[in-house]
Length: 595
Image (tube, rainbow, N blue to C red):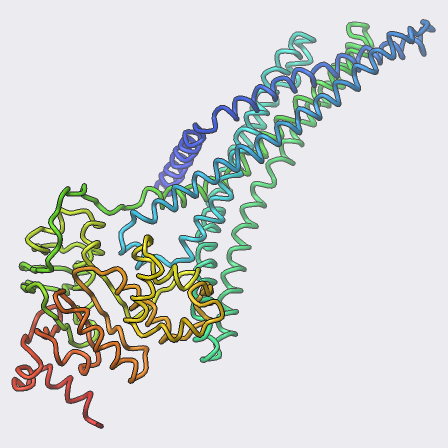
């Protein structure tokens, strides 16, 4: 029981922190908020004039009917006209406040939060991206931020609006009749306590729902990216079943939250109805004894209606805020997440020559599972270094460390004598060109994709790189040539053509160190030979790291490193390693066993 109370207290404090942070994040739009509050104040002043006018009109009609007092039609129509003007004015001011809140404030607030999240993506560690489903991040940037945007309206458009109205009307009704005012105000604490209790109970349901919603987005993203695989294995039914399970779970949790929060306003209305009963009893007694007039009683009942309205709005706002708090927690959790530690640029670095040194490097993705242990290696400028070995042996990890996607737990990596941990990541990566087995093209023209690593490239430079990659014939056959637009999922070109374009991109970038991860795996044999010859020319004078699965592509490498369990178990050229009859020999023999 103590643990439960402690958890509730922690959740309560966490909710307060989130609300405080939300308010702080609204600081850039404070001017709009103040404007909305001023307009709201004018609206309140106008609205509280209506009961007074209505009371006077009622007294005139009452005097005419019961006492036979002649009606002053001029005064009567003047007061009716003023009442109409008040109602129209309140409506106009209400629309103006809504415009400011919904179109100006909420839009700017939401846009800024999404911009901050987009910038955060540039700073989060690669391991965070590797371990977090893309759909989960998308869910936070879209659905959760949209709900946060609605919180601006909830906090200021509903709660603050209600507080202003309550404060002003409370003063008015006490001036009108303190006894009747007490009958109204005595029920306020009851309403607020009920609202607070029920609203806090709904938060946990909304929090759970937001988490499930992230899983829904992640599953949708998986189904789209793995569309072909789902079709090949005829898993549509299973994926749909999983989706339905998540949606049902999400719906149930959301429903629980809304059922709890939805009871707030009816309960507050129920409590407020007792205020009406008290006013009728007390007001009736006062009217019978001629202490108040019929018009004054009508006016007070109208004030009570105005008083209960904002009270119900505050209760409604408090219940809606629980969903906002749940979403805000997820957004702030993302924004407050770990960031890559970045160094400042070192000025005037000499042009890289391509020397790379691993000095007693240790690294593991998971602390209890060591991967690379004590790796030491010196690569001279211009050497072609091939990295081979069993799957999971650490080949790609070496590239990840070189590019500072991850940093070693122990040891140093040097490029031209510079410890790369003392350089900014952008400085390190400016020395490298990469072609990966898993090709990535972006939505846009062929020209833009080739020039991605060198945005200032001219048409001539792009065409030259394309010719070196032997992709010029393919591009010239496209309907719009270099301006042909590649679809978002690159479905309008083949896998081999995608690979050729990424190779052309690497040619154009012209970096002193190259990393090639089985760069010719998706091209036919004839094109592979052409590209291999061109790469050999390109790699002259440049340091190259080639991760190889097909050993035929690295037989001419200066040095071949055989990596197993994060260690260099063999080192030498193709001929030397075959003569050793070790792991390299076994891999080579297995590939050529059926040739």
